[in-house]
Length: 165
Image 1 (cartoon, helix red, strand yellow):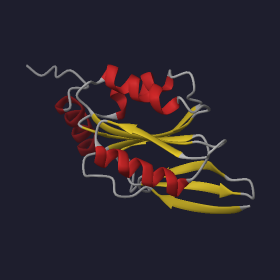
Image 2 (spheres, one colour):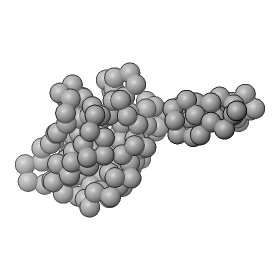
Image 3 (cartoon, rainbow, N blue to C red):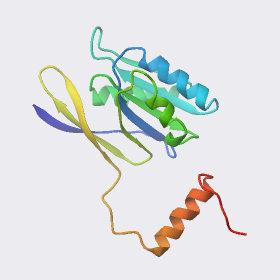
Image 4 (cartoon, rainbow, N blue to C red):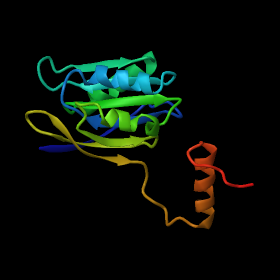
């Protein structure tokens, strides 16, 4: 067995990704349907790595550039039955529970806007994802100024109510 790291690359500024594992070829179409019914105006691309039959990387999406980037990264990762969603103009929190409820979805490795490295094990049979490195190493413990920044950001994004008079 050989261990590798594969960087997810060429993600546009402000885009987010969801990397997961599923078990069936119809995953790519089912995730497409979940996204467009949850967020009709979101731009996205999906790639799914088929691990039997023709073993193709399947793709869907409503944005050709995001679809191409998802397909290229999924091919680089090359781990069977994994999927990669790239979103613009939305956050994973907006669709994550809906994606988790797709019957074929087995697990989510990450949902993030951070740089991601995928830790892949390669055997004679194929590849599998062991985990991900999502973002950077911490620089310290949150201080009062950091708490204020976090709370202000969540309110600016509309995820928390602003109770200030």
